[in-house]
Image (cartoon, rainbow, N blue to C red; front, side):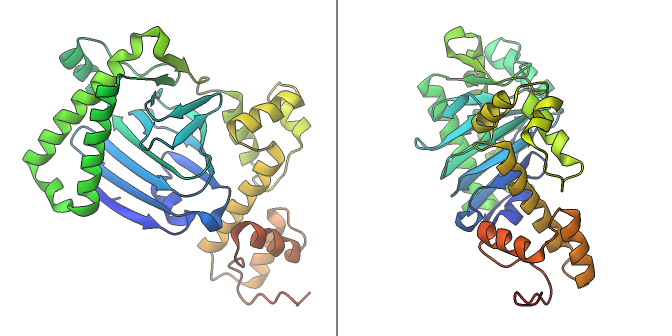
Length: 316
């Protein structure tokens, strides 16, 4: 992506492409999904702002060279990390290379800030006289209202410039002033992490459901039974289903089926010019022996015909 900018998306494809470095998205109702994504790369901070219109679940895979903080930006928005529902007023302080599922329940507006670990440590010592290190597991914090409002205001101000007045973000003095204020607000919010009553943690980055993603990735076409998955993850079938409902918002069977449809859509869109016999081979590879059944499932989920050349629904 360019250093700063904003885009509106009428489907999940472009949105996913722009977030692929940190999120693998699965939208539950693609026909209802629209989004706006705004980004700004400042000298020491990288900012994201997102507005989404439909429920989704994302497998979050954060890099190991930056510390991320995420938070809802509207009072009616929430980000769900398993047992923790991150509501407006709270922020999530993520661990390095954190791997977690994050989901929403509908319309949601959220934001993130990314900073180098060494920059965060220096800022913490300089501005708050504390050593700010990425936690070993993600932490939900509730900073004081004053600093939280300041963080939201400054983040929104940068986002507004990226959306409406991008030229101002090329002004070094403007950028320097905004970033200094943002860094002060961020450090003030994170410095409160030592207050025990305002902390809650998400499971470690090696949680069992992050292992689920590795298990079902190879081969992506095979639908594993709940019993097989539970055995691989060393848990009971009842525990697996309970964890999936909590973290994914659905059972393991439905999650695999929707994920498979997303993967095959991506492959078909990437290979629009292939021959019909290659399309048939792709169907089989993803476990669809009956093309008509595939088209039916695809239509029910995406609300459109699959990108198959010369498809005649009446032709056997």
